[in-house]
Amino acid sequence: MTVKRTNKDTVILERRFVPEGSVIMKEGEAGSSAFLIQSGAVKVYAGGAGKRVELATMGIGQIFGEMSLVFEEPRSATVEAIEDCNLIVITRDTLQQKLDKSDPTIRAIVPMLLKRIIQSNNVLLNKQTTMDALVETVNTVYQNIHTTLPLAQKKSLENIVLPKLQEFLAAIKSFKDSHISDANTK
Image 1 (cartoon, rainbow, N blue to C red):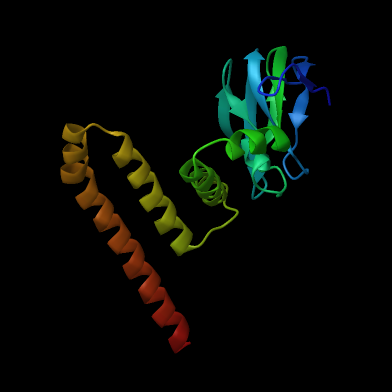
Image 2 (image 1 turned 120 degrees about the vertical axis):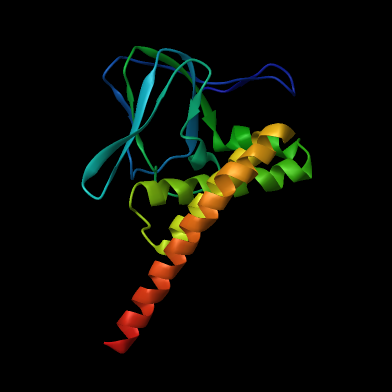
């Protein structure tokens, strides 16, 4: 890894060229770095329950592999270059140095957000297929959308979408409750 310090606040990060068709990282392998795309594009996919699920196509300015910067868990997806790419490598140490200089609230929020992303990905990829996980994911997605909208659109979302969402969640609860009572009577 090439890291040069020019002064105490400036770090020149490692850059990596990856030719089109190359796998940059594989689902399940250990990881401790993320990648910022300077040029080119990548496809992100995962294989849950014996199927390949495309999660995203990413290009210039986007970052992938970021969860490994916070969690010491295996990679949750495979990333393949669909064009020649120039990448900036961001290590766990680099992120930690930047977080250490940030506000304590930011230091607390970053790991929490990444944990929620992992939970949502696991549900979408059938890695965690419980009714509770589905309910948690639905609630998280709604809250994330709600918090990003202007006030007028929040009210509209609350009036149009929320009642249907609550009806859906009530149906899930009813289904779960009836199947638990069925299982207890057998």
